[in-house]
Image (tube, rainbow, N blue to C red):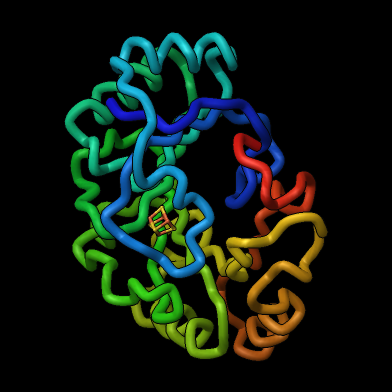
Length: 227
Ligand code: SF4
C-alpha cells in the first residue's frame, strides 16, 4: 500500500470528534477539490504492506480504540485496504473510513463506519458523488458536506431533503470550508464561510443536519500536519 502518514491525534470532524484516534492516510486522490487541505497526500508516501500498517496502528493505539482510514482517497487502494479494515475490525478496533463518495463503496465491510462526502459545487468537484452509494449507507454512517458559500449550502440542504438523508444515516454534517493556506490563528477567521452564517441558514430552514467544525484546526495551528 502507498501510505502518506500514520499518526495519533484527536478525531476532528464527525460525531466522533474529540476522541483519540489513530489516522492512516493513504496516498493518492483522483479529485482536486479547490480547498483541499491534504494536497501533500496526492503524491509520494512510502510503500508498506498491510501487515506493517497494522503493526504501526497497534503500536500507536490499543485495540478497542478508533482508527480512521483517510487520504487522499483511500478506496483507490481498495484491493489491499478492504482486508486491512477487516483485520482491524477482527482485532477489536472501531474503524472509520473517510471517503469522497466518488468510488464504489459496496466492498467496504459492514462494520466499518463510513464518513462519506458529497462534494458541493464550490469544491470544483460538484458532480463527483456516486448516487449508487446512497444504497451502501447504513444507520451508523455519516454524510458530510463541506460548504463554502450560499450556493453550496442550498445544494447541501436540497440534497439532504431530496434523499431523506437524516433517516438513512447517523448524522448529516454541514461543515464550513476552511482556507487551505490557513496558519497561525486557531479560530473561525480561517473559515471560508462564517460558521455563524451557516448556523443561521440551518436554523431558518430547519435542516436535519449537524453543524460540524474541524476541531483539530481550532486546537492546533491549522498549518500543522500530523495532528
Ligand atoms: S477528495 Fe479529499 S483528498 Fe481528494 S482533493 Fe478532495 S479534499 Fe483533497
